[in-house]
Amino acid sequence: MPDTFLKAGDKAPPFTLKTQKGKEVSLKDFKDKRPVVLIFYPGDMTPGCTIQLCNIRDNWPKFEETDAAVYGVNHADAKSHAKFAEKHQFPFPLLVDEDKKVSKKYGAIKKLFSATVIKRTVAVIDKDGKIVFYKYGMPKETEILKALTKSI
Image 1 (cartoon, rainbow, N blue to C red):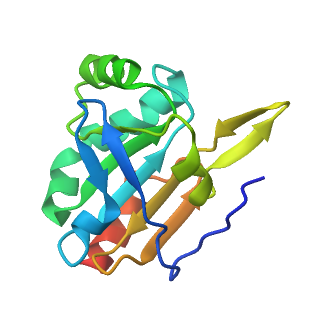
Image 2: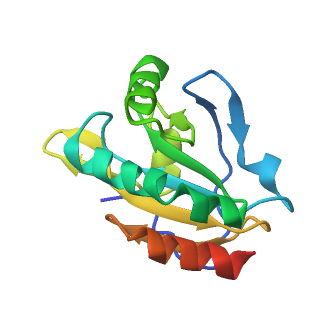
């Protein structure tokens, strides 16, 4: 079970991670500027994760209209993320959370036998740093976009 149970209205935990291209991204960089979408997913190149992130890609023009910063997040290294993003032409970066610290802060982990794995989780954070949408699983892009539209 995740250590953290976040919900809409909670302050988003701060984070700093690097993209697959090595660019550092911090939540504080978006304060008062743009909403942020974090899509925590279990693995690069896996069927469910590919479907989930390709759905975001296929609806990218709608996400662009919200001016949100969208990121996929998991524990794979930059090289794995780069191959995954390139293969599927994701227009958004993938963040490297190798030690799963950020995933843990966001309650996006679970135990699978003796392993700790990323739990499919989506968090939408408004410009004020507040969580406005938080859901486990694969919420439809329409749900995410609705939350983003309300947060603008």
